[in-house]
Image (cartoon, rainbow over all chains, first blue to last red; front, side, top):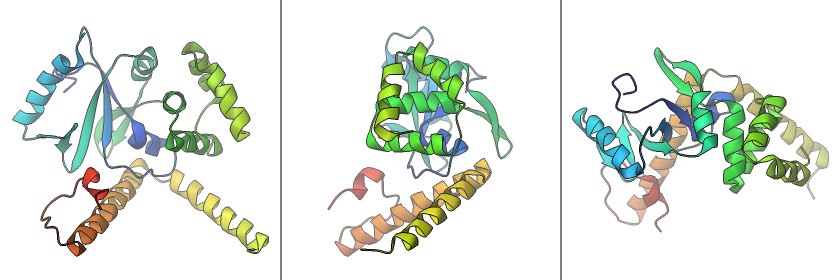
Length: 159
Length: 67
């Protein structure tokens, strides 16, 4: 899709990306973040994407598109944190298919920003398993106004 | 009160399992995620069958929370 210009740069985020770095995370869908270049309206930017996928036989199901047994959510990126996460995402291979996942430091920053209980628990997992480089993480957090939240998190959970 | 030594042992076992799982390949991990997903969907399917509702295809996550 990226090569054919249907979406801008994309990267996998969320629980599936987290699974790349830590133990498997139970989830029901795949979050794919993509650059909404030049778009001012997320709905408009999704139309060609949905049309493209429908032509391949992948139909929308709720907020996702059912692709090979997985509900895939396509999420346009509008915040500076996610835009940076997209730019710096790492190339990986799943089986023989090349794809991209967000870096661990960006995933942690997003989880910290979102702040649900399951996100915070997952941040602890990343830290315990040594999946993040702390200096890189602190750089991301400082750039995106999350340094104070990080300080509170560390105090609260003694990490 | 549970035996704290036994509990500490369980905690250590859990940490060891988590570290082992984290070291699996991405493909192996995704296979586990798929199995977890299917197990949960199957459980939901069985539950809905018990309540008399008819589902003959994919049970979506939002349906799992239905009583």
